[in-house]
Length: 466
Image 1 (cartoon, rainbow, N blue to C red):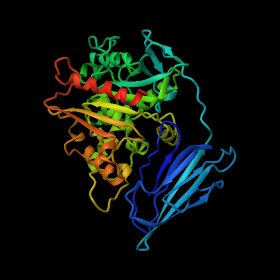
Image 2 (cartoon, rainbow, N blue to C red; image 1 turned 45 degrees about the vertical axis):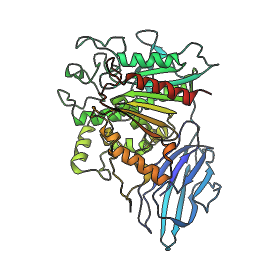
Image 3 (cartoon, rainbow, N blue to C red; image 1 turned 135 degrees about the horizontal axis):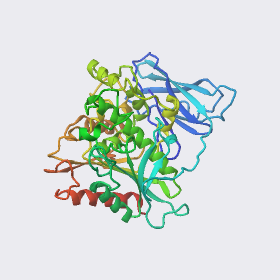
Image 4 (cartoon, rainbow, N blue to C red; image 1 turned 180 degrees about the vertical axis):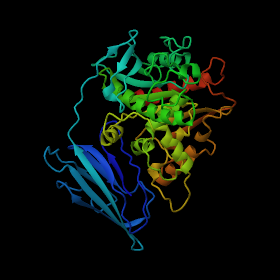
């Protein structure tokens, strides 16, 4: 099977596919690409049998020039979009192994017009630092309230690095009594992270996934606040429960919230998103994991549809389809969603503090074996592009168990590195273990708090300083 990477700023495309036996045709893999872009077709990123020969052949669409068509990687330039013409390109890869087995893999590329970029409108909210992320940035059309801070000197002429700070299930704002609007005060963890990043000259954005849907929905740990959750969190069950169905919806919603946040943030003239980062605690870390996963381009849409996914049990499938039975429709087409995810702004690094690493199986919980893999390598969890993930996990916290010490996310990441020839020194999946650390590693009484904050400083210096 073929890995296709679109060479455009801020993104590296990693498509999930299915490995087929020799002499079999693949299901059609579809890619959406802007006109006059460079596309690289790469056969070597997958667990394919070693091939003696590679041959890339165009079978449909306006003729393109395939560079290195007889090698494991080939490139081509997409043609100009034809308003009244055929804008689909079909290219097949035929591989022949040393034992003469042949396999054929097909890719269809939809060419679309260059996408116009319009600056966002900063719509002020309750105070001078609260703004609205417009619904056009969100696949569900949802507007999000976000707190934005710019360090001194940031401007269109002097853009600065930017970092998204992502809240956990306790919400972004401190709550008032149930039924009252959330306060305008950030929870202490996020105020702490915000102050530290601003002091380093980093612009910050803190989106609120809860308050944005209802001003009384301040957190989801307490049913007194969860009862104010509206669609898309609310699924028609009354009263709403913080059960597995709710958590399945939440991971998809928050992945889309991250997409909207980063697209909006990177459109701001004051922000240089070639130097971007993300920091999240608990469910916020989970949201960042989902957003930065190499397979999310395909995983997100598959997670929300009715079809049974490969490796998914019947019970898991039933729970997932129930969770999305009354989910609001997307305001964009599946092709557009895939395009937006393909081009999503990826951070240089992300610090994940006590994340939940199952991600509710939005990325399949495959445990790879050593031979005859029935899936593509890029279906395993690994950060997309050049994003570097640092996990901060305490040994007395069971939430991030699957991230380390033989958990299946670490198994997936290490297997991906092994099969891709990634040296341990170049790993994009790094674990920092805190002996006897609790879930809230940023708590005032937590002895590991200083280590976590110092590491954030070091990551900023490493990635953003000349």
